[in-house]
Image 1: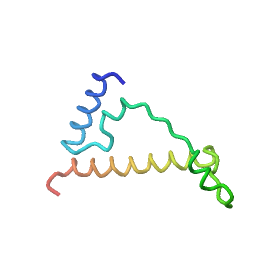
Image 2: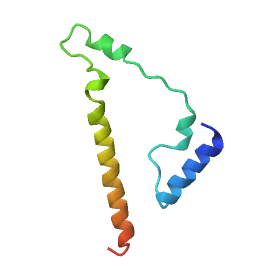
Image 3: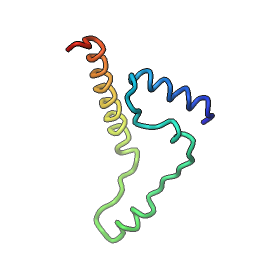
Length: 85
């Protein structure tokens, strides 16, 4: 991600959060990361446990993240609606 875009994201997060620390620093977007399950599969070999297919839980995962974000936004809106409460 280009540096100016990272800085813009960081600035918008600070303004939106009124100085609260962001969960993901913009600098992390500049890192190339690959994930795999090789070690997990090695440790699970010979057991009755297995990794489920991504398609079997992706909708639940997305729903969880969306609900969590909605709760956070709702709390932020309540704080802004009545700063003296």
